[in-house]
Length: 128
Image 1 (tube, rainbow, N blue to C red):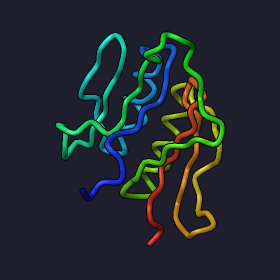
Image 2: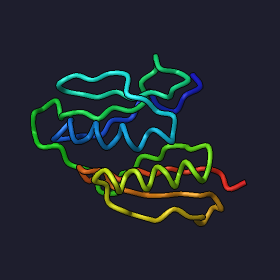
Image 3: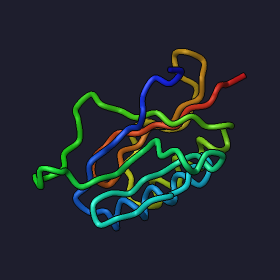
Image 4: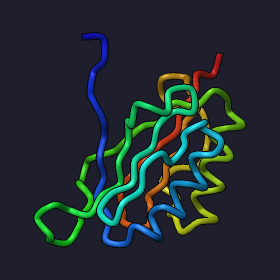
């Protein structure tokens, strides 16, 4: 098996709001919504639409969705422009800034936000 994980899932209490947010911020990352139900939304890379790698979901136990303290999901981007666009789209669609786009300790280019539910997400590209 060559993959590290099958998929990543974050919780939401409002799938309509979450879909609006993620649909917008995923455009520069070439990620597309491929599944939407009353309980979950699934996203895949445009070059592999049959493999959902990210879900936004209502908790199965019907409790309130919460974010994990210390939890973050990082999405790979192809360019600094894509990272910048991810960050600005997030802020325009209800996200909260957690770190402006820029080069970090490892020399790569990152931007950090929280989605409307408080989940911390990041986009990163190599600076080379």
